Length: 190
Image 1 (cartoon, helix red, strand yellow):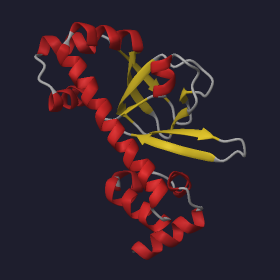
Image 2 (tube, rainbow, N blue to C red; image 1 turned 120 degrees about the vertical axis):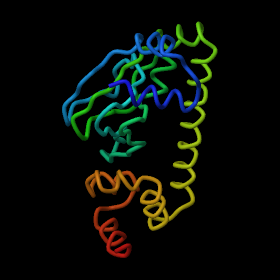
Image 3 (spheres, helix red, strand yellow; image 1 turned 135 degrees about the vertical axis):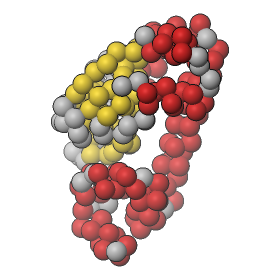
Image 4 (cartoon, rainbow, N blue to C red; image 1 turned 45 degrees about the vertical axis):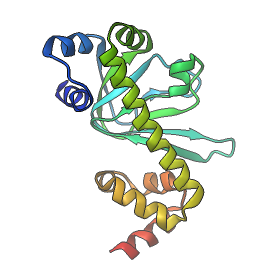
């Protein structure tokens, strides 16, 4: 279960087996079923989650009832409501399983303890956060500056595995288009 996490860490920083086992000892395994919530809006967020298996979506529902998908997370990705996790405020987003999932959960306190004890682990989390900021910036710029066709092409190029794995309804919501528009865009690609 921890091989993917170990590979991700070692891609960024070197850890010997003892260091990795110490790092891993701070995580808790959690299994969830399709449709189960990892995080619910309004609740406390105690952990950051590494995805071992499955697919999740993070989303917010506005006052009009429209779902806005912020991100997806699949194997080897991380997900949480960072605002709630870091600032100790109630969650502003929901995170739900689109498939049966297995995650490794790391509490805020354990993360802080690990970072205080090891510059190497702190470096890993800094790099991980930086990659997340880059992805978020790309997503925001895409929403602000690209039309539906461009967003569709960007999504297809960046996440071909998700394109096959997710429903049209979910992809359309992520792109900010109707299912009909997504169907037209898909037909043009074929």
